[in-house]
Amino acid sequence: QVHLEQSGAEVKKPGASVRVSCKASGYSFTGYLVHWVRQAPGQGLEWMGWITPNSGGTHFAQKFQGRVTMTRDTTISTAYMELSSLTSDDTAVYYCARDSESFDVWGQGTTVSVSS
Amino acid sequence: QAGLTQPPSVSKALRQTATLTCTGNSNNVGDQGAAWLQQHQDHPPKLLSYRDHNRPSGISERFSASRSGNTASLTIAGLQPEDEADYYCSAWDSSLSAWVFGGGTKLTVL
Image 1 (spheres, rainbow over the protein chains, first blue to last red):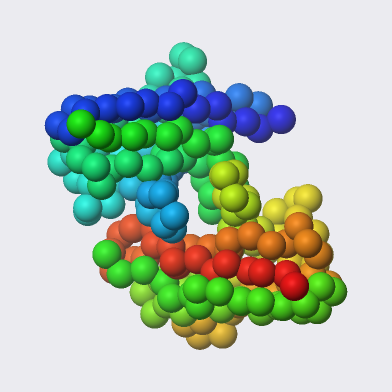
Image 2: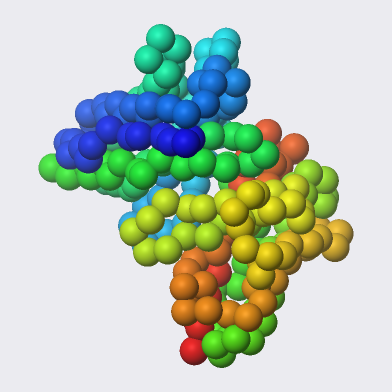
């Protein structure tokens, strides 16, 4: 079955960077966009951007441009999201989601905590 | 960036029908249509409908979605205790070149 498995929780200090991975299984990884969406504690969903696994092309929300990098390794069907210059406002659960007719399959989420 | 507007909370009795709304504009909901997601506490979101009224396989027929102009709606018939969750709408915004979400509606089943 289609599944997205994300890496484990991270604790970072302000100013650091974090990289979250999202391993796809059960479908052709290069056939669908992968989105990254985050959710701050008690808040709603916030779209960060997408990566096209086939070409590696990316598109980011304006808010994150210059601070986010999305990459992929097609040999292991894994997408990565790296966010730099972390502040406490980046404390959130980060999700990857496949795009097949909208956000149809989601990873379990990765908690990133930023604290000094 | 601008998002979609949803009522923060809706309460309905067991076995009744709830209708949740999501208001956008001609650049998002009115143009590309909306999707609806359900999220239970401490779980990832789950897609309930896409492009206004299409249901993914495995989603109960009790969930139906529609759109009128710039407002999308999700109707949940025969409310069950497990329907108590947060519901989000989302749409592609062509002017922002970004996906936008509503703030979410917390549905309480009384």
